[in-house]
Length: 347
Image 1 (cartoon, rainbow, N blue to C red):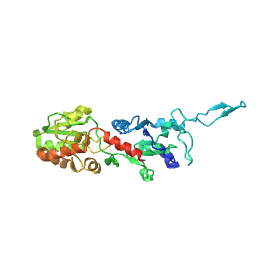
Image 2: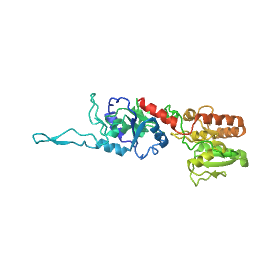
Image 3: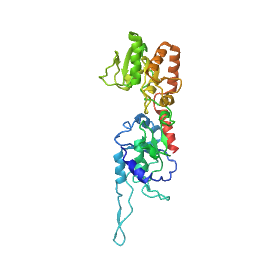
Image 4: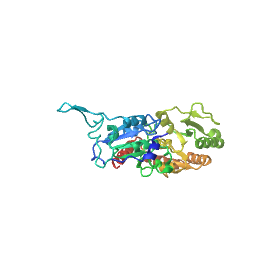
């Protein structure tokens, strides 16, 4: 629970300071939400953040308790002896990690940043749960929310209005698509009788059960991204966890059922990057992420089974969709990191 939201609703967002002239590199502090110790916990790909280095963005990550500690840290006064021998207590000196003049108030009266890490060019909230704390930090120069799959709490109160957001299209942003570098086409044999199901979503499991009822022993099934003790009403092969094993699986099946598009790393995008023909649930997020020419989007499991039979039988359409998918999704996060860096500089 982001308890800083209560503070935000009561007092409002802290005023922003003037931006400094453009520096190289841009300094960004990523603030994590409650219960998140790492960006991955918040649903943010570490590979994306690592790619900011090449874009001359200096990124620091702070957990919620670290931000609260910086906000609560008392100023450290400096003492000096005057010519008359009196002891004078001077204004607080900046923290060791503070940039020059970070402790001084601006001419516009905005409170100064309490420490150097919070005096970065941009304070970036890792999802909406981190946004309330990010908004109440005094002395920020610019701030934004890096969108994740978590919705904003109590959005109906209007506290999210006017806040800059950054993310991929299916989360409400416009950053280029990315996928982990491990997901590339593999030199493996694609089995024409193999259907892959990723995850334990009803959409894929019910579609696979329908295919098994229709085709019986004509088809084989493999399941990835599930718990080890999963039981299904049809025989299946298990896929080992890990990106390398998944990349091989995503290059081996005639068709795969993907789970709904969620977060920064939808399985459907990784499948497309590997050249895997895909059937996915039809919703706004899937249409934004996958486009019209890659995966077949199905409204329900029976329609998904129909789509899978079509892709198994129609090599021409399958090949066209595979090519479109590989053109749409490039392995790696370089283009996404470049788009993120440009968005941060434009705040």
